[in-house]
Image (cartoon, rainbow, N blue to C red):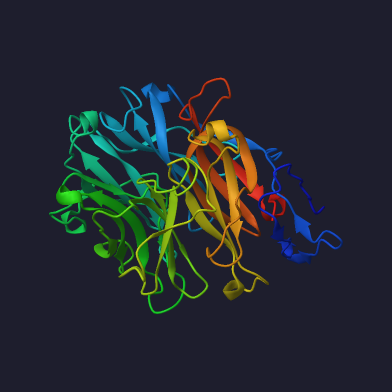
Length: 411
């Protein structure tokens, strides 16, 4: 195994080289104290999971990824959009399964049938004890939301009948996860939720939501379950009005202090350029019941207005010699393309999200949009993400899966 030292003409993202762990041994990059970010993509093996037109669907969007409790399979969820690639219409929740670490994917399976309506924004959470998979989704009548108008959006809940997710219960509405004033928009996730591993709220399941309403109400929040995903309730909310930040599409991770770090898309860009001010974050110190402070901007995470994903890769509380978390999202360093969803990158933080790399490592130098990261163990991560061919100018041609190692990342 070699230490990979990358160079960049821009000189951004310089970070102290942390110790790199692999195969149970710690590798120190002696004589190479720093690594640099680059716009050159990793040489990684990826696979295409969903392809535009497959199974009669116009396109697939909104990826979510989990690993089953026994680690025997990866489950890739998505919205299968039938008539067109718009956010509303006849949309199903579908999945594919891989039993060989993402090298191949089995046939398309239906999880929730839209039947002419919209069922989407899948948020799967795996219970560590039973292996049962909880799935939160959002529904609206197919005729709603057209033209960007107000929507009657309702969260739904279903569960896997078996730990491999080959059968599912019927979706059941969850009106308790709504407030009356959230009457123009509501969405679960997207991306996977998580189950807390320690602290006062160990085993609590958490997932992100976002909402809008009359009178300028806008914001995001956390919903949680303390009974393995059977019942859910609203927890933390940041429901500001008239403020420059509009947090949406949360991705959650557990900090080493048993707190919750929430990364958000900022729909109300208050930055000085298109690329700045499009990501925000907040922390909950009480298991997702409240936010310590309102969401604030994360200027280092430059990029277009789009969902991103965070995941923990290393934790001192798990016996690792250092902490390391990852963020995935598109960002092209070409100033003429800052507003375009292009170039999927991984950026790292070694201080629990207080600071982040500004450029990071390119996973895919093509059109790219939504993504979901998971920890595969042993310093490896899996990434499910929307992408398109270079000539297409369409980030929604496919949903791809990439598997990469911590040692691949510029630090």
